[in-house]
Image 1 (cartoon, rainbow, N blue to C red):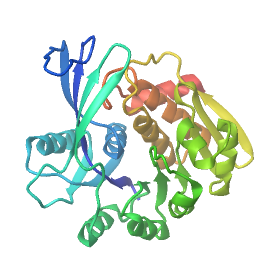
Image 2 (cartoon, one colour):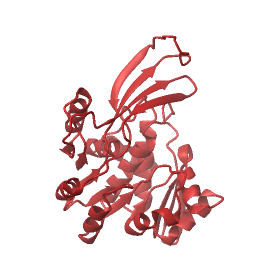
Image 3 (cartoon, rainbow, N blue to C red):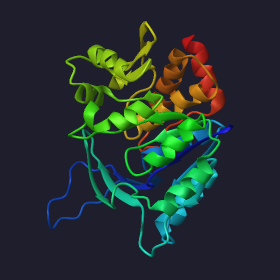
Image 4 (cartoon, rainbow, N blue to C red):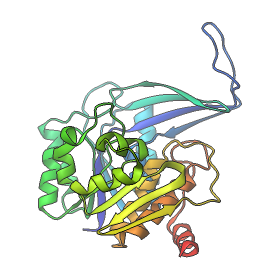
Length: 301
């Protein structure tokens, strides 16, 4: 069990920077900076794990278009082995144009958001994920695969993202199956119905013995059995763009799980990788390698 696996849609971001405002209808403005990058989500977490030296595998949808070819190159460059689930002739990725303004961001996207797998896709994903030490879970059609992997001893880490209708009742099957769940402040309050982050963390004890609640830029709450603690964010990391911060946190957190660190250490690793990610524009621009991660961790200790 020497690798981490996951299945999810690939996202590509076109980032426009250096504009004071969004153009009105009929106007054209030129920006000062532009970059083409892989976007956030499950692929970003796996890439950050690959950069930390862990073998990672992804089942995703890739076509023959220029964006798919770009994604394949970036996966390979960063130590992620992609397996294609798509056989059509369209662009199967999500493509987002993001305009980064001085005080905010705006987006418009192409794509269907997530993968709806058929039996062949589920079989393909299972074959590449079988034997993984950790598998990332997402909501959707891969639940039968997660159940098989859990029965075989794979650790399951669930990251849901925001949903206006999220609740214990709606997500019960996933929460009951997962070993870890990593909501942010807003998600934890919504899914539990609690009034405070601490209350939300304790409400999650219904499903988990080890609790993680990300409190945005402040840090992260953890509960390990009866031990409640708070891990503050890394002060030297200054926020430039928060895109992909949660994905990067998850990479550091799973690095700790992969090497059997205690929960508090896993969260501190996540604070480092998540904090570093916000120091540059884009989901994957700011990151640490394994040596840098361990050096930062030593400073915390």
